[in-house]
Image (tube, rainbow, N blue to C red; front, side):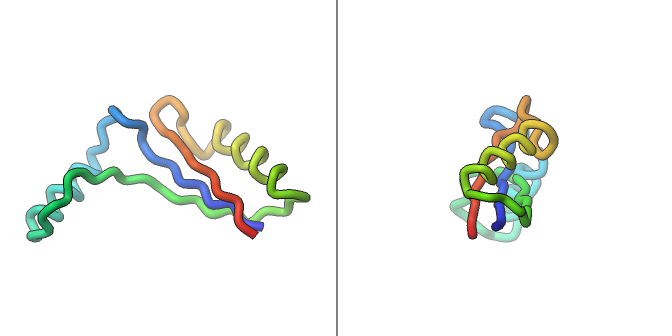
Length: 80
């Protein structure tokens, strides 16, 4: 099964890459974009006995390595 992990900066944490993209979109004439936040997506191919086991293991990976939980939040989706 696969796990899709989306990692993104917490609200209130400065996102200079998002600001740069926002300014670039505005400069290119794309109006109506109120804010841009940049994150990352990590896709894991797992051997796990169940979706519950996979979820727990990936959350442990996020807390240990994949996300800096001081400044980042993450969301895990387990798919078949």
